[in-house]
Image 1 (cartoon, rainbow, N blue to C red):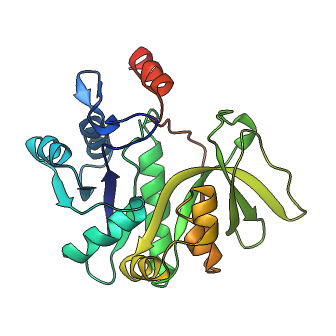
Image 2 (cartoon, rainbow, N blue to C red; image 1 turned 60 degrees about the vertical axis):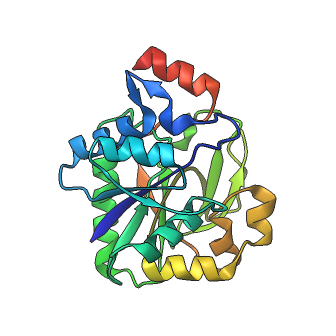
Length: 242
């Protein structure tokens, strides 16, 4: 079974308090939850947070919350939450970022479909992440993250921050990364036990902890480009576009 966990915190550096920022008259976190469950009515979704205000907002509209202590990143926060949950060893967790705007209706349906196919054969220490299949039309954001994907194995061997598409060696393609991850309970325990890695700290990318441990993710490709609420500019655009 796939369970969706959404890590959410108030202390964002670039846009403080963004889970509770209102768009279309609703806090972002509520807007996301309703978008998810309107696309897939049987989706099992839990918000993971250290904030009482976020917990209150989410519970008020009928969704589940697990409170955690402070955490270095979203994956660490979910690892904490899993220890408090009723997940079985066969469940997989989809880490869905709380700042996703889900501007395209088909994205989450496509994501869950690919995730369901993956868990049929995956072992407990395999994991996966998402990329945009046509990165030639990338957003041009200075915060863009690129997955360097082996064309033969369809696994990412590295991730890089770059405002433009990186040059790659033969057999490797650079595809724009979406910060969503699929992993098992055992993989989360392994992630926690490894502790922060050099590349994780240097690049500020949580997935690099597993890359540095030579644990490469399978890549799911999607034609959709979900928008994120990271900056004041993103917020203004979201207000304009609804």
